Length: 354
Ligand code: ADP
Ligand code: MG
Picture 1 (spheres, rainbow, N blue to C red):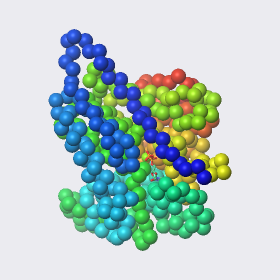
Picture 2: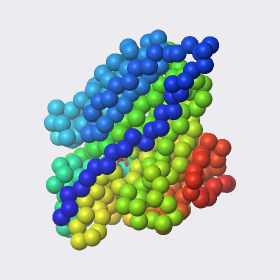
Picture 3: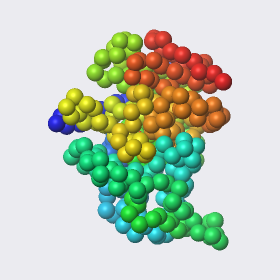
Picture 4: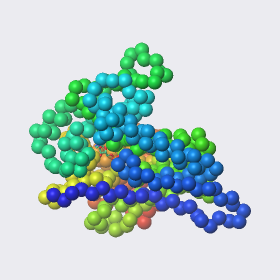
């Protein structure tokens, strides 16, 4: 068995011109790299409070990781996975509710209760294996996010803790949504600190605050998911294209990010909750562009599971909430019409309108 590799890549092209005209005042830049939530992260801010803002962001990521990491026995999610019913912090209740929202609009393609199945395939430990079908069938019995209850009747909304109840044998994992949730919190910190220009990349999940210091939109490159360079239509390029954004998140999910191979077949880490196996929808990467990073993270995983047709259907029904870039295994690229004017690419692509 070829052990899987996690290819992390900085999807980001931060085009900060170092050549400022004589009359431009240069904003101080503060940039920090950290490793958290199992990935490399970069936090960058410009302006007077940049130092403090970046520091606060690092602490916030660490605080959220301590709550959400299902692999850490001391985290709140681990406690919930053991107890099944318990009072949790507002953040934990909030992210579970957000996951529920994504699950609802994607008809269950996003489902944090597939965590025991993700574990069974070895994606949490790195000890990859193809599980027995019977084992998967048994685990599928204990999935379905609609059976998790957040909050009890009569709860006072501003209480510090919220009751979460899940059925016996349930376990949840937030790997498909936690980075997007965190990036939204970082954008909040930037705003509170008066940062007008900043960008974060949490393992390729990018969130842009304001514009670049020169007032132009941030340029975020979308990685070519064809890492083996086998798909002719994708022309061996490093990037599928570039999106120009301000105050938006650009989040990509792809089967190339974490996988293993056995007998020439590739098994990746995005699970179809209907089958309990890696999604096989014909899509090889999905990027979501949205003001809502948490939604974008959940949707990038879910639309990858749904496949092109259902993904575009979902977009048609919720187009005010997001846009997307879909890449298929034959190299076809589709973008939705909302990003038409801010997407550029050297390879041919179709614009989906409705
Ligand atoms: P990454 O975390 O590599 O950026 P994703 O955001 O697509 O990629 O999340 C993938 C992770 O989400 C998996 O490693 C797993 O923990 C979890 N996951 C896998 N399938 C699903 C699913 N259908 N719904 C929700 N979470 C999932
Ligand atoms: Mg995701």
